Length: 290
Image (cartoon, rainbow, N blue to C red; front, side, top):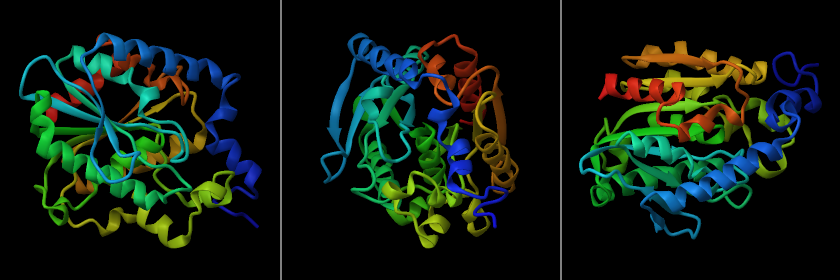
């Protein structure tokens, strides 16, 4: 009996969804993230650990643009909702700032201290804080774009689907979303090594899986650029490929971009380079949809 799609046990699901198993040595990528981020924090003008909520983990690292009224990128870090922080991803700000963006990296509480639903609520608070305060960091509150990697991509998509009127923000506060290497149906994870920390149940899966709740959407969604690495597992690629045609039914635009010869971890490394192919694609997508 299969537990999810054609997978019969946890080992098969872990092989697809545990990205660490897809590379020879994950420490190579972790070291790049840590060291490059440290360098970028020293290079750029920063406002670090700005509080946006009641929990001590609810802080923002902000990298202001040099000029006022800049486009704003809110980039949400990954770590399977259970590890890492925004500090390991400071490097993604480098390329965007060089191109004239203000960049915000939210931090959030982690499972199992909180649930994925609570993480989504915290990141919604971060967006609300940005809308009311980003002008102090040369950002334009009417030009807010979302992005994220892995679990952060899931969060970015959940925020793009949020009914912002219920949170007293304009309905179209989010102008576009770029989701990189995300999981958009949480169903397989209840059978995975992550379950001990995520503590998923059927209700949470239904409420926090973009692919499962799209049919309930009653508004126009912002444009969505979906990115995945060519060397990522077939399940990571399948989920990305399934999201795009479903999203386009509720949005003016959505496209998917597969990055050649990149895996789950290094697919975002070129965000530190303003002239990189990846950053140019994201910038063009944003410019087309402002």
